[in-house]
Image (cartoon, rainbow, N blue to C red; front, top):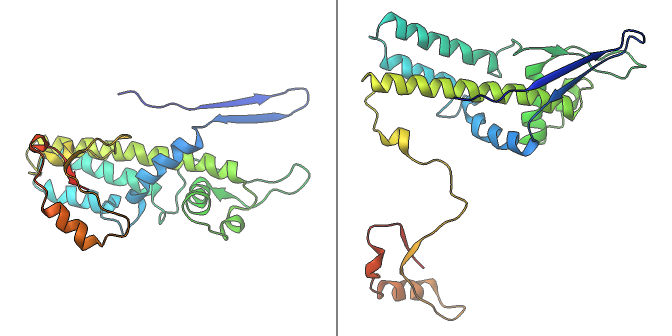
Length: 228
């Protein structure tokens, strides 16, 4: 499996003492999409909240060998630094400000990341500016990238662990859990089993009666079909 990689570049001028740092980050639209997919794993009210998932996995493997239960514990522990209720940083802390002014207060990458997630992306959190102490939207997006990339990484690891315990016979889940399509196709092709037209303003009950009187097209078969 190939993993995405990022780049950080640091430059330093010995004579002037000036230093600069640049980060290569994903396109905002791509990260927005990934964040929408990953956010449910961070919401404790959601059925797929990471702690609920790992607790369920723990139930299935309570009689499994020690090695498997230790792997499960590592997965569980790997999630918590990403949780909004955990005070630890993911990787860094930062202070921001103008060159001619004093720097603002120290802010963790997770605080910045959640300020981006709930202040810039999902909601209009007008209190976020005060909590990030001078870190602009670029700084918040950078931290959001760090958070969401780690959530995606943990999600894949948890899914692979679930597949492993499924193969070993611990869960007994239906195979469709792993094969059902979850991404919508950009084009929808549908066979119309029944079709009826009527003048504008025709009551819905009359349209339904028309459809009920139409014989389904024999070519519809068992494929996805719809009456219109």
